[in-house]
Image (cartoon, rainbow, N blue to C red):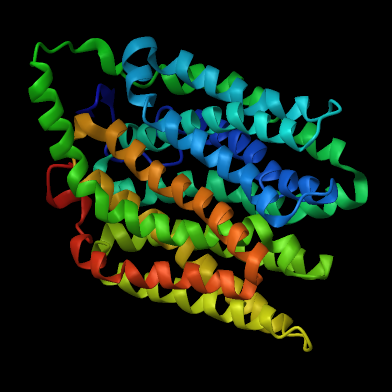
Length: 405
């Protein structure tokens, strides 16, 4: 079987398909650098005298630059190819972590979030687009699950450990670990050589026709993107502010560990369900689980005079289930909505939803929390999730039933 310029054997396992081992290794290292800094830099800002709004601004700038870069990644792939694009992304993502070792202030952390965001934008779009091009479409859900584990594994390990490590061993060690994407440069060629350069087929279609084609391609991607935006806004708020919302370091560690591990497992298992049944039966329930989990966390942290550790952990677990599952389902739906030659576009739009939601969760929840407290701020995240319920009727296709195959 051949698609997107890649020769694929139908029986090849998703873990060992040509190019997948290199992709998974690059993804794990790249996301390690992202994961270890995501809760740590905001914590450093607070320890340096900043408020929750300032802490949230760091990750908001990171995600804004991520989204901006994601808009241009398909163009970069056409112009300079996969290897150069991926290599640039890993350098932009990893090198700023080492620059945090210099004597900088809060403004310096904000400035370093810019290249980190650019590098992360490249990694996210290229990674998801590569998955769709390296595997048999009938196994896309499982492949997305494997790719999700390469992302969620570092998150599960490093997101809960990073704040504890920074507070007990020092921020410098965390910033050195955050340079892991520089090692990922060793894997970029192994990914690129199995992928066709998108720019090899030149078309003379008029500019106005291109614009209409892009609009038609993007329109069906909007519902899954908005659903993803809502759940990642909730997840981004929890990942950014868990050290500020939960007073005990042990509870922060347990909460983040629960969230990230369950999200990883959920994203992996969701792939098999998506391949077997399609995504339609699962999207609306997952949205409801998101809202319920966030509301439980909001209630628990609002009871200042009592300890509700169990409720916090259960709420983090509930959001983790939906966070992982909806990542898989919405990405399957995004690829199902477009043809094979639009994988990079689908990946870009999906990642924009993911990262815009993460950035909005950090910025908006941080701003509201500064004025009213985190309990009230989380109510906004729950309401946002509920508002996306009508969109569940617009998604839920199976990848093998339309132009995505």
